[in-house]
Length: 291
Image 1 (cartoon, helix red, strand yellow):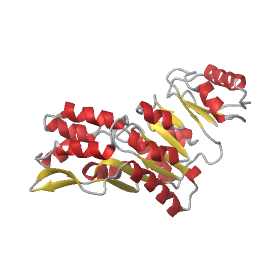
Image 2 (cartoon, one colour; image 1 turned 45 degrees about the vertical axis):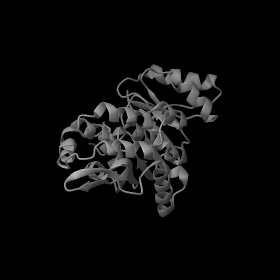
Image 3 (cartoon, helix red, strand yellow; image 1 turned 90 degrees about the vertical axis):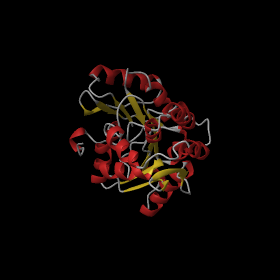
Image 4 (cartoon, helix red, strand yellow; image 1 turned 90 degrees about the horizontal axis):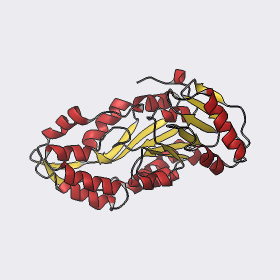
């Protein structure tokens, strides 16, 4: 199944163009159907998933394309990253802004998310720079800076309504992740704990650190506990530390991701928001739990 998503920007001619592209690629397309008129359509085909993805990606301007097996595409487990995925910011960078050192910290964050630095070492180095920051800044940062990503609530709440379990696994911090998870509607949240001494950040992170291995292991453990095959799982993230879980999931999605992450993922969302993943699972807008 190929699902083409471009909220409000699709026409009948785009369906014809997509069918023609699949036919030329030897993918034997069938009849398409609108999931939501003008926003998303499904196009079944019979052969060569990789060829279909190559044929369709970039064919329609500002459209995202998800190519996957038609059977079982409504997933039963979601494991998601937080920073720049479920929320619009990198929390550590915003905390650093209150300390007056955002450029230095943000540069390291970007390099780590591109996969150029060891995640754990980069996290330790950035948190060390926050030593002495008053913990009251955390609540202020949450109130002033944390914004949920478009479609986050609809994605999680719709999946849960249809019986899926949803887990937030973040290399960020519990002081943000626990509140974000509750606000969006996740079943569970795992993240790192900032250590505090006398009301100020100690500049250290409690062990063990939640990193790439933890994200993959959480997906595997949650699936095993539910008795689910890998094919029934969905993982989404944007950074290099999300790659292991993205590669492990039945559908691994790179969301507005760094190049290394995008290259590793079986699917990408480059244009739309998180609600694109509801269309990818076959849910028309009428079936969504709205934000």
